[in-house]
Amino acid sequence: MDSRRNSSESGPVTRGLLAAVSRSFYLSLRVLPGPVRHPLSLSYLLARATDTVADTAERAADWRQGLLGEFRDALVEGAGPDFLGRAAACAESVGHPGERVLLRRLPECFREYEQLPGAERRLVRTVLGHIIRGQSLDLERFPDAERLRALPDAAALEEYTWLVAGCVGEFWTAVCAEVMPGFAAVPAGEMIRWGVRYGQGLQLVNILRDLPGDAGIGRCYLPGEELRAAGLRGELTWPAADWAPWHEVRSRWLPVAREWLGNGRPYVKNLRSFRLRLAAVLPMLIGEATLDLLEQQSGSGPPAAAKVNRAAVRGMLRRGIWLSLRPPRHW
Image (cartoon, rainbow, N blue to C red):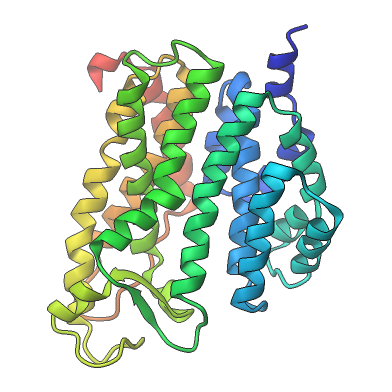
């Protein structure tokens, strides 16, 4: 038996945990081709674990920073009992049941990580290093929920979207190139360029969708420089005294999100595997539908969250299958 293929396709931890911690993205991971399903699913679980640590507000920001640093070190040096014990302790402060179980089962995740072939393990370590850097920046910029703070400018927003999502587009492409040579109809460098922007677009959609919830915990990813230029006066507050600057800046970033997200189309249509196309197209369809909902909102009241319902997601799954079966020239 080919040991490389076996290591890629097996993964009892990933099979048992994915559905518990993800709703829409689980669909993409589930339909991936066998050779890439395990490394991509395992990397998602590890990234979700770091995200859980970063978002556990019951723990002080410096404590979370320290645990993220230990997580990064464990990817290089191995997960020792002290680190795993602190991760398990963090789980006691986590409200989401799936994420709580994930932190408790990190020893199994790390065992599967250590069993990956060397090249795949290096790619996972690299992408998680970028993601942890983005999460650490979050904790520096938004240390608590007592005061609402914004990113300084557009460059900081673009950097953040790359660190936590654009690098994932690069990672997925690199794993496919490593495990499934000839996976795309164009050179890997072109796929990486599209994949990076596509990932950034997905993250920007999340930022625009989650603006009210993030503001409630002291985080604003819209550039403060732009909010002030749009007429914001005094301290950043939520609820705001004047919603006009918020709507003006958010409406400015909606077409940027759609443009970045649009890089998913050439990315998907140049994938040779039906399963890869289906896995990659689903987030794009959900992202486009979310932007549609955001664009329909009134500009008179506070910006509201937008969430695509389960029935709509099921319809997008059917549409994704249809699109993925079509020849690229018909996209």
